[in-house]
Image (cartoon, rainbow, N blue to C red; front, side, top):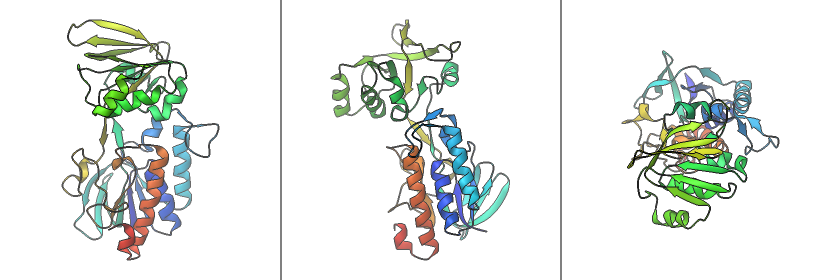
Length: 311
């Protein structure tokens, strides 16, 4: 029996664990299929406060995990396979074990959608990124491309013009899906060139270990063209890790957790933190902050102060 079960071990989950353990709540953290979250595949993190020299993503997550362990957090390897939200306490199954918890914090995160190219996988962190806010600074006076045609892609392209000398916006159709305001802003930006009706087929150069060009195929003519550049940003959406909660906890039309009040969900006693409910910011620091808030709300819930938890 645990006071709190935290599902997910990224910045949100580990911050929540630090706070719940320091409040003397018996806490278990379910690692998930990707312990440490997306920062484990991030090379250099320069926007997390307290590290003016920057820090490698895996090192940052390793430090956060050690801090949670220092205060008494227990960790279970594996992914949550079942949760009974009707029982009190809640019953959870992960890694072949079933256990009970008086409260739950869901911090399972979301994952960027990728193109599915082998070169894309090999060059992640070497010029290929899914976060302009995180990595745009590294492309001062460079040429980059953004893949996508929705609001996220146009926002990324516009943001990157602060640093890059030129931004290609690559879209597979002949019109953008972004809002009218974002389309206007994008089209009127002199640094952005839109490449219509095109899809990436390869990113060069795996041999060099860095991005040197993007190979595109025109879907109407089938012609391929190589564009020399220094970075590729994929902005085709995210998928929240909420499959196991479908039908048990309220989700929105895109599968994100619906937040009630502060960090509550549709089930009293179950809270949410991080990218699993964040459709806008998706930053390590905002995830960590929400982990703190969810931990405090869980404590208030266990103390019987449900109104303080956000309902």
